[in-house]
Length: 252
Image 1 (cartoon, rainbow, N blue to C red):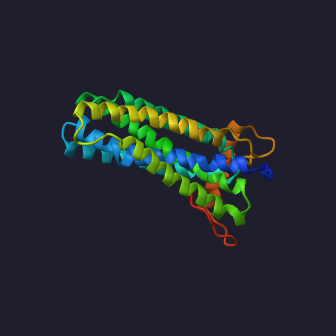
Image 2 (image 1 turned 90 degrees about the horizontal axis):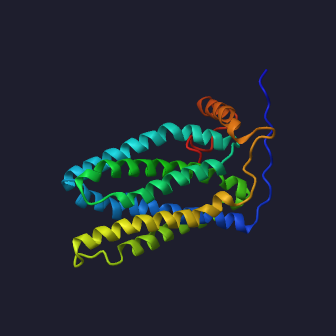
Image 3 (image 1 turned 120 degrees about the vertical axis):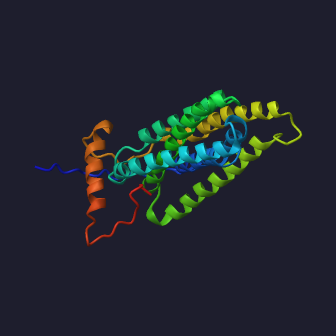
């Protein structure tokens, strides 16, 4: 006999929960800006790898492998989120994974011996970063009514871009060609520690804020993974003709 699950109605939330949700985007997008796009990627290819060509190739391969891992795991994570599984514990876990990897980039010295360490940390950070936004995006329907989702989503999107530009400006301050090369390397490593601390500080209110995360009544958080994943993936693979799916398998 197939058990029936009762979906708990989301509780009304205040402005504090909505601001906490938007601040996570402010904190998280700095990883994509500083690590993946501008500062650390240039530091790796020019200072850590043996040659810029080899560094670029290794960097692209690492990002591709992490992206494949995200593509394999995101449908399961999105199924958990779509079926009302616990989002905040998974969000916190993915955030800690990415923050820890970012902080570990401090130990990447400008030497070829640090190539493997850099690639492992960047791959882990990329995976945690992408997976965290699967659960982050799934929180939006639980925070505001459907007619207000566009407004809150826009605030989060805008704060994310502003946060990325702010941290990029801070990271690039003083990193000019006139500076000694060793000083630039030290400054880059310091930025990794500052970025991880900023994300932990600005992103933690979202995972700590109290609002309904849509857990099924009578289920513990750890036991919601299997039934939520099975039902979510089943609905995704076999959509009904009456209601076409309105969300992607990645949960947003």
